[in-house]
Length: 250
Image (cartoon, rainbow, N blue to C red; front, side, top):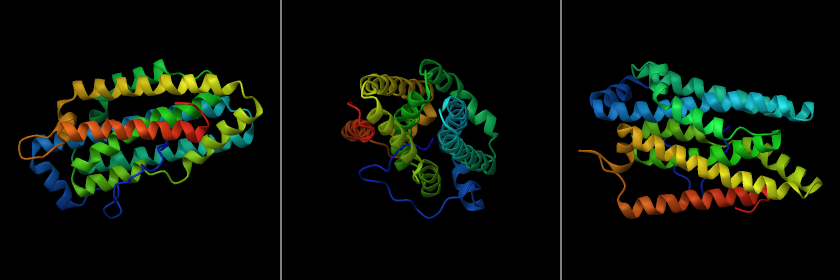
């Protein structure tokens, strides 16, 4: 689920991205092998995240209590699948096999989902909105340091076009009917953010190419320590804002 609300200070989207890179863009990215590896990692991580989000939402739809809820969650899952297609098309246009680009991220992403399997559909909605949201914020931050065309694609895929409204409404309605849910779902939200941060750290440690986007590489500027601190502060602020929107304590 593209569950992340737009950040408090959203990044500008440069034009309208499509799955297929133009010849000039593909050539520019491929011209520097180190940068191609970094972009491949970024798009591969996002693509596998979208694929797993699709699978999780499809399972959540089965747990939903009414046909209206099942239908809405199924539409969210379909949105994730469309994003997955856009990302894999871009990878293919860069001369990269999409499955090969995604493979390095399977262990970390699968481990996150295994440790955060929801026990009911409401936990699934909180996970889609909060847990996926902080990971998406992280990739949105990374996109600041890539070329304009790749950045536009990443921001397009992560854009919330109202998908999060269903999750927020469903959780708030459930809490209004049974106030006891608030404490349980708040604890669940806190667990999710901890697991999401662990996943991001694992990916950063294991994938030097992806980390090089953020910290820089010869010929490419990255974030200094002060900016990294501000970035993590923004991630925390966005998490708190999401929890508040759900009516939960962060």
